[in-house]
Amino acid sequence: MQNFVDYYSNFFARRLFRQARTNDATEQSSAETAEITLIPAQDQSTELLDYAIFFNEGCGYHSAAETQGQDAAYLRRWLTFYQPDTQRLPQHAHISRLETLKHELYQHHASLNSPLLAGLLLCLFIAALLSLKNLWLLLVPLALFGLIWSHTYPALSANAQHLQHTEQLLNEQRQLLAELKGQAKQMKSVETLHTLRANYTHCLENFLRGSIEEILPKLSPLDMSEQINAGTMQLYALESRGILQIPNIFQQHAEKLLSLDTLIHKTGQGWCAVQPYEELRGLTRLHYFYGIIRLEQGAIICSAFYDWVGNQLYDEQHDYCSYQNMTHIRHFETAFPTENQLADELPDAIYQLHFGEPVDVVALSVRSGEHYYCALPARQPTRKTTLSNLPDTLLCRHLRHDRSSLIADLNQHIEQQQSS
Image (tube, rainbow, N blue to C red):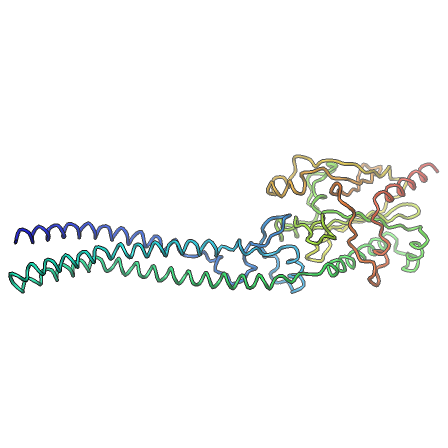
């Protein structure tokens, strides 16, 4: 009987040693796992605008960093172009990972308990055998079980703490996800098409008036109105995607980003965002206005980029050119240069969306070799972007969005002036 007891005592001692080594390794692994489960600081924000989940097919997913410090009207216009996609929130991945970890910790807890229960049963069996010889020998299994417990308890305690911490993180992430989804539902309020067009109309009216006043400072508003009504002043407009103007089609200079650096650096790829309203379909957030104001002896060529979100004009330009200095205005189709800065800066899918197909170009050529041109998406119908019923918008009300009439009218005056 004594040999029998000694055998199982030695056997259990060896098993206990192996289990202790396993527990030590498990504790180290659990500690490493605990570190992995820490949620990145940027994924703990309670503000939906802090997450790069706002989508527009023209630029992909986008952050809302540029809305910081802006007013409610700016945010409404911004949300018109970029709608939140809550399925992209990182909390979904964190919750899935934490649920997996929680299941693994429960399994690990069970594996830690199994040798403890086995040891308890073995100690009870040994105690039953020893009690037949001497009651004092019962202290042996009690001491043995205490040894088992002392080696197992730290691992059990650490696992329980990790499990509690994981459940806490899991609940926090679930609560945060619900809160962020609630914010997304409240962000469905976007700017109306009428307000967007009214903002643009007022900006454009001021720009056109300023261009005319600088070229013709003595022309009064009454004279301007009379010339328009008499037909001696005609206003033509072409409108396009701003991004199509950035690669220099005529290679007049090196790659140009004009004075748009402020907008581009502030919005990243956001300036590629396409218009969400069907009435403006085919245009982008960065809008381009190309206008020709035909006069008796020449024309004012003006252009500007407009940000529909910021309600601001960029790179405003206007020049006067007499018909004698013009050679012709023509319309043709061309493809973009294969080597340009944007091809390297934009993801391939976005670049192909905007620049993958040929474009229509209307170009006014002058004797100096310069070209005043506007690149338009091929086969895109003309969009009327301005409103004609706003007060104090005389010039915008008389804008003609007719490419064929512009080319025919200007070429006719060029030929008349040059033949006289």
